[in-house]
Amino acid sequence: MRPEYIYTPQSELRHPKRMFRQMWRDLLASRSLAWRLMVRDISAQYRQSFLGIAWAFIPPIAMAVGFTLAGNARAISIGETDIPYPAYVMFSTALWQTFVESLQGPVQASTDAKPMLARVKFPREALILAKLGEVGFNFGIKMILICALFLIFRVPVSWTIILAPVALIHLILLGTFFGILLAPLGLLYKDVSKGLTMLTGLWLFITPVVYPVPNEGTFATIVKLNPVTPLLVTTRELATTGILSQQTGFWVASLFTLLGLVVTWVGFRIALPFAIERVSS
Image (cartoon, rainbow, N blue to C red; front, top):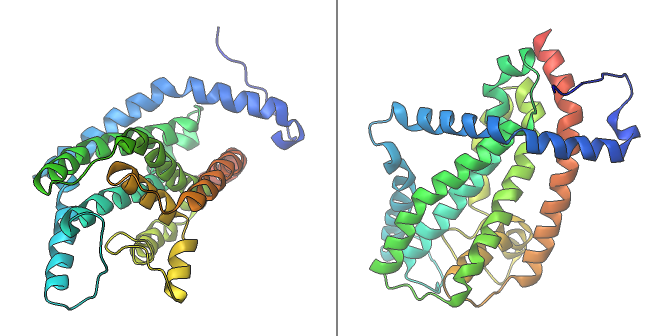
């Protein structure tokens, strides 16, 4: 039996219980389509690339080589790290790339699906789930590099490594939260996609990816207020030393992420039809 859709001029917010029930149904109904979109996007991602999946390894390695050489030449001053510095940079960069992919995914998915959104009725959540699956697939490839790093540099591993995926999921959800927030605007304005590239470049420098978390000064305050910091640092520490330095920040950022994700999901469902109508007109 085909589902029946009833369109009314009333806002969904007038009936929150019915709205959340429908959101959950759409999320479940979107799984099959999300899988097909994910397979299509992953195939397209590597189809016309000479280096293929090597691009998952090149940025972390290039960044590690550059900052290691700069540190050895004393061009920049980097504090002590818990694990060998090249491994520290490559592992942190892999985590940062995963966050950026989860941030850009919803915006890119909405933009690429613009013709389909205007003509076909389907659960919009499929676009988000497909990008989440793609992020997970790409991180699975990066795991090859991470495992090699741990072996080559003899990085100590704590039993807490089994908890690292939990912190990683929170990091991915934080990126998805920001991505969903920007997706309707990205559908209307190309400036959003271009601005995200510049924003993430600046954001990288206030995130402890190539340096440890500073303890003093204004810059240290900015780094600690960055919501990515506790999630990325906790993921890294759970996978290596097992000694957590950002426990309070982690729980605050996680709560902020989960609440924000629900709010932006509601906003996404309400705003997207208006954005589609404006694009189609």
